[in-house]
Every structure is written in C-alpha cells, then in structure tokens.
Image (cartoon, rainbow, N blue to C red):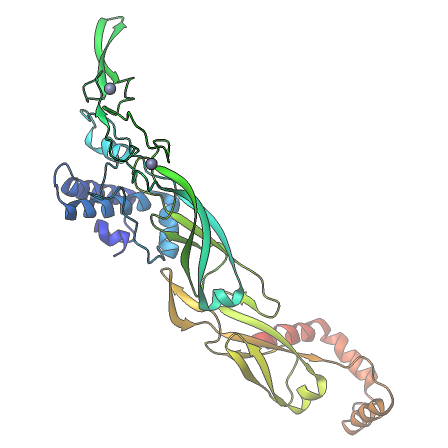
Length: 382
Ligand SMILES: [Zn+2]
Ligand SMILES: [Zn+2]
C-alpha cells in the first residue's frame, strides 16, 4: 500500500489535502481515542505516511523512487510494541495540546544516510548486498526501557507524576500562576533511580551491524533506497529513523549508460567493414553476435534489443529492459607498405579511384564539414 493510499489521497494531492486527510485519520486511530493493537498499527502507518508526504524532499524522493524496501520496521521495546512514542510535535499542533500531562521519555531516532557503490553490471541487473552500518540500536539489556532489569521508573515525589509544577510569576498585571516542567523529573513525571548500566539510561547503544539490501536493477547514481526503521534507534524506546542508502554506479570501461540503454564502441578493420562479417562481442548477457554488413560505414549503430538496464518503476525493477547500442567504428590502416600497398593501389585502380585525387579533394572541400558530420552523427540514428 502506498503512502497515498494509506492516507486515502490522490498522488497529486496538495499539502493541504494531505494534512486534512492525516488529521481525520489520526483522530480516528489515535491510541487515546481508539485503544487496541489494530488501531495503534494503523495510527503508526498513517503517521509515517504523513511524515514522508508532508516533507517536500522526502515526498519527492518517494515519488521518484518509492520505498524500495521489503523490510518491515522492527518492533520496539517489546510488550505493546507501540510504546510511548511522543507524537507531541505533529499531534499537539493539530489538537491544541493543552493538558498533555507528563512528557514521554521516548524520542524518535534520526534518519541515517550511507553511500554504496555498485558496478554498472550490478546496476543493470540489480544485486543483493550486505552492508555494514553503525547506528544506535535498542539496548538489549533494558529493551529500551532505560531501567536496570527488574526495576521500574518511580513516580516523581515533587510533582506527583504530573511532570509539572505550579509556578508563581510576577507580571505587570500582578502575580499569576503558570505551569512549568518539574525540575526534579525533567517533566517526565517519573524518576529512574536505577538507570540501565549498558546504555547509561538512554535505552539505546551504538552498534555496528550488517544488513542486507536489495539494490533493484535499473538503479542510477543518486538514487536512494529507503529502509524503514533501519536508521538510528530512538531514545527510550522511541521509533527508529529510516536508513537511506545512496547509490553510486561506478563507470565501466566497456559500456556507457544512457538512461536505461547501454552503449559500447567496437572497432572493425576497413576490410571487414567493406566485406562484411559476423562478430562476437562480450555483453553483460554473455557473448552476442553483431552483424557487420558488407559496406558498413563508420558510426553505424546496431541495436541489440532488451540487453540494456532493467527499467525501474516506482522503485521496483521490471522485466522490461533498455537496449544495447553497438557503435561500429571503421579503422583505416595507418601503416601500409609493400604487398599491402600494392594491393590497395590495385584496388584503387580497379575502382577508378586512383586518378581522382584532385577531384576527391575538391568534393571534400565542397561538402566537407557537412559530409563529415553526417558520417559521425547521421549514422548514429540510421
Ligand atoms: Zn539499557
Ligand atoms: Zn517531577
């Protein structure tokens, strides 16, 4: 299901429409209004869809490339799964906040970005890669709770769990009461007396780990693969950010990329071009036959259909592929001596080309630049 479908909006929906759809669904599924695992799961999906589609850059990336991940976000903190994700930023601004009670310790983790190089052949067909990433992960000792195993946060004595304390402020209008975050518990309403030693009470630790990514065929330099929930783990069991894998395709010595098509150049001797031959060339699909017809001109292009890169659609490789274009360059011999020279001279005589040197030069001048350009470019589209 696409993020657009999750929110029930069209792909070209305006920012305002997306916001409206999210507000409606968030009200419907918010855990305070609609308790239950299904609603929580739905709320998470809706929130993630909104997170992506409300951010111009992330939405553009999503439109261009999709998610391209098969990995579901890992669960957090065990138990309820949904944990204490603080939706304050998005949610509070829509629903007016007001009485929000104690703040949650949980904070969402950051997105992470990593660069990966692939060969052109890997980019053409796609490849599965194991990559090393170093990010924060959920602390295994406390499972993200931040407490030593067997202990729990205790209610703050100072604010009695409200996270707020009444404060008297002197204003020009007189003394006023206002609420301020409790300094003793930093507004959380609870105090952790025995913080987890492994993570120093953060609920997460830095770790190097290997993850497997599927790079789809047809990928290009600059494309980013989004792996949901594989970024930095959140603080205190908050949801992890996403991991973006930015692809760089290494240049290839034999093949050049042009969109989904590939181009390669082959050189054939003048005699082969004149007499014709069947040549075998190496391609990413193994040896292929290229038919050089008798009388082939330099710059002639032979197109091998379907031997280019896979075509990506919404971040997914299809079976459809671009073409491989083989440009045939005719090589004129540079050192012609002895018997070879005699034969060429005889050939020139037979073709009546031996005495025409003056005329040929005049022709070349008359149509010089034009005919040379045609030879170079005209042939390319023939
Ligand atoms: Zn811990
Ligand atoms: Zn307190």
